[in-house]
Amino acid sequence: MRVLIVEDDAMLADGLTATLRHEGFVVDSVASAEQAEAAIKVSEIDLIILDIGLPGMDGFTWLRRLRSRGDEQAVLVLTARDAVSDRVHGLKLGADDYLPKPFAPEELTARVSALARRGRAIRSRVIEHGPLTIDLARKRAMIHGKPIDLPQREHAILEYLFSNIDAIVGKEKIASAVASWDEHISANAIEVHISRLRAKLEPSGIRIRTVRGLGYIVEPWSDEKPQA
Ligand code: CA
Image 1 (tube, rainbow, N blue to C red):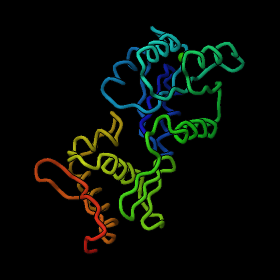
Image 2 (cartoon, helix red, strand yellow):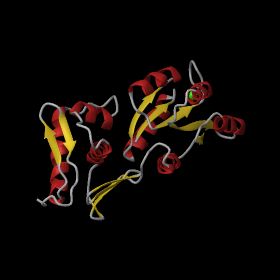
Image 3 (cartoon, rainbow, N blue to C red):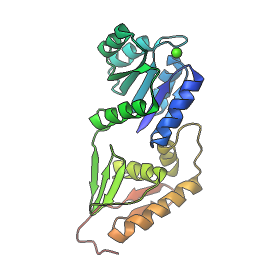
Image 4 (cartoon, protein in one colour):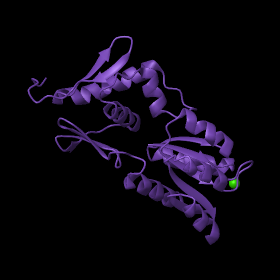
């Protein structure tokens, strides 16, 4: 789940970023609607956290544009406390939820997780592949119903690979899907993550094949396949 924060208060934006990253979201942040517009063109954003008072175009104007061209990212609007008219206006313009400032970090993560669960941002909540089940909303993976222990980044790579099951995915693509812009993940690091994932998946017969020079592809699952 990739989140874009549009907030011109740098301290607040940093706090939001840290809180959500801690919860396992991929988070980027920008300080204006103009930058947000550019951001959604280069990255597939699932959820936008939108401040209303922004330099340049305000949050409402941008939200109206977004919805009028049919963009469907989930939008959580940040409003000033008690500004009921802002809240109503935001929801009318197509926001999915709102959060009055100031708010507690737990409140933010609860709202964001609820939006994720509601499934607007995530097409399918569960991916199944042979004995492997990936629960996208809860960020958990299981083999034969038993949870497998995956650090955040490995889980994100697992999600990405199995969401693109018929495609060869390059290391660059994986890196840009699972990291925010200010992070750099090297091709070597991706290789390390993949080999750790393989160690956890291959005993159950789930294989991630290397396609030399191109990347990786998940092998189709077949029950007849001899188990390793
Ligand atoms: Ca502001």
